[in-house]
Amino acid sequence: MGVDLTLNGAAATLSSPPDSPLLWALRDERRLVGVKFGCGAGLCGACTVIIDGRQARSCQTQVKDVAGKTVVTIEGLSGDIAQAVTDGWIAAQAPQCGYCQPGFVMAATAVIAADPKQTREQALSQLTNICRCGTYDAIRAAIDHALGALNAAPSPQKQGSAQ
Ligand code: FES
Ligand code: FES
Image (cartoon, rainbow, N blue to C red; front, side, top):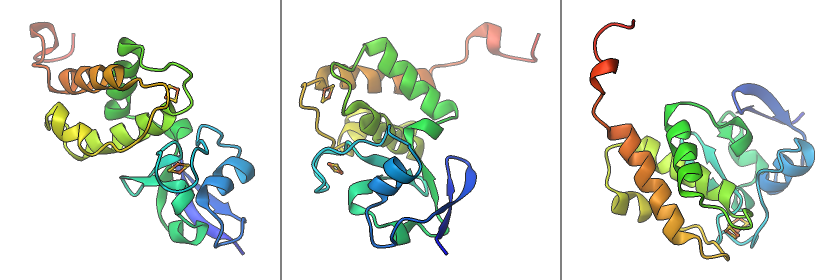
């Protein structure tokens, strides 16, 4: 028995109680401790994961809710969008204590993946995560960097066939 899903690109089964929060199944059962506990009430976003391509608060998601779904945590993040977002985070030196940052990165990746051509303001309007260190200016810069990289015109060297 258990809840079958795809977790960070691989088939997995969660054996935690079906009505328990996904947050604790990921942290305690799977040791995916990049998923952080903040408020436990759906407010802060520290626990954000991506479920079927959308940002989701894992503290407000029950294990049974992810049956048959695709769940990605910060440990399984990959691909061009995720790379652009994490590059942006590094370029902006966004974290201070860092506790909220995995949740921000997950939320930003899901939002930007849904529409890489959106404006910074459009992306930010969909980010409701909270940072107690107040890194919002750096996060804005990180989003700018990510969107800029994704929408940059190809350089002449990169056009044409590979050399
Ligand atoms: S811990 Fe889930 S939103 Fe705060
Ligand atoms: S960097 Fe400390 S809570 Fe956001």
